[in-house]
Length: 298
Image (cartoon, rainbow, N blue to C red):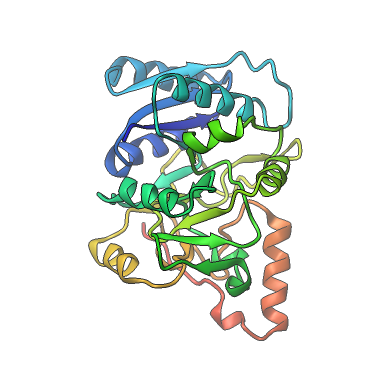
């Protein structure tokens, strides 16, 4: 089994460093590729140069010229470029990762579980090994279906994610070409009959409220990124709970802020409008006492 892990980044050096550090501590086996979408921040270019110099034998760094002015930059163009490269070099899977994510624990059976999902469900294009968010998941029964034949959980309403593992065998069968937005890729994957599965034992999490781009506007810079305000790596006890769980593993139940305090209700989302909509829904149902309530560590 030959696997390529690709981290996509643009002008977020502190986030990227956190992602890369967590990868080398907890990431799955395979080759590492960092794809920079034409960053122009001096801190980012300096960090990438240092990586290439200090870890040159452990990773490769690509950079684009940012000629694609789409609101997501060249993300899907870069993903297509990586896919072509992986197929040409005989990889079986590509794991697409973004710089605002963090590996939380190391699963020695990660690729065995992923391969088992693709083997049990050969129509699948993408497996998502990311912690799902309770803040968006008030109706888990309607969103997921358990699977007894593999280490995955079926998404009922989603068919694609930009942060997941793609089967290159399936991509070649479909002659897959990425579209310009996640919605377009989701509709395309649905129309082609490609179910998507969530890994029952996810290892990757989105860090809380990073500075990001949504529809051409910069949003959600709630904590300074000059320090490591991210997540505390999972303990052995937490990992044991994940491995023993027969439910969808939720981000808010495991990932604790590291270096700052999170007060209830805790906003794990970079979409403020969606966060408030969900908070209002829980209030109307009288379930606010179950809203995620966490204390971080200093």
